Length: 363
Image (cartoon, rainbow, N blue to C red):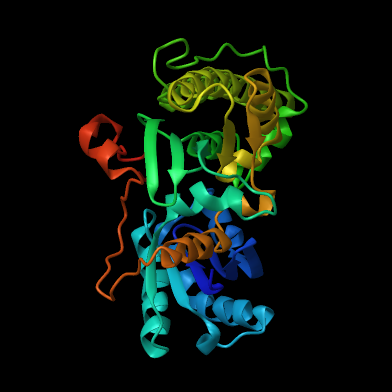
């Protein structure tokens, strides 16, 4: 196998990222990995503001790419291809990164690979040494996505279920905003929950016990908002208890839905499988622990990327680009930026109820 060296660019939300990766017969090797966060810009608004995100990408992307190339000790001429996130995501940010990738590819006569951000997450467990081998069951859980996918090979995906309304990461962020904890909300809710009573508030578990492995978090989020309105002024312990109760409900939902997804996976691949968690919410230690215990109970291997590759990053985009380039796939310069782009297009076409809502998942 000829080694392939690919520059990856990621700008789908509020992380400006660039990375250089080499793929050879031993697997992927991350040569550089730069992530420029935007938390400070969005903190006053307690959430990501698309216009601010796009402007920050414009201001920071050139320097981020230059730093990635410098850390890799390479010139653009040394690359075999340029991979850029083409969606799904905040369209302004996606356009910034994709246009930068097109410009570099055109100027240096390199193949362009427009990468689905979800495919980056789906393949991210393969970044670490001894990473996941195909096939595996993926729980992709983040601020914009919440779905189960059977990852069978590069470019071969089967969606088993997804969120019918909001993604879990969004629910974490909205709770943090309700409680004035700060931004980004997920880690702050997890930290507050450590000192809380998870049984104080009785919160709903939407779809618990139902067939299938779809998610719904809108009702849980609304129930938390009602508790906040009922209590009025909240003490620190009130906030901790609500965070703990919310996280406990989320854990019950994830466990129930994952059991169903594993049964679906078993029918095709047998009782011994691999359960993979990816996406920003997969960095939550309680969620990781629950999934790891469930995998052990079901005789599955549990695999998760290192924490730095759970959240949005360009190393996973470079890997997806290199894998596609290895298979002979590349895109022309007319490749569009897409705010919506389901990883399993056939599943989305046949099951339109799984399309994202106005405030729900991006695919």
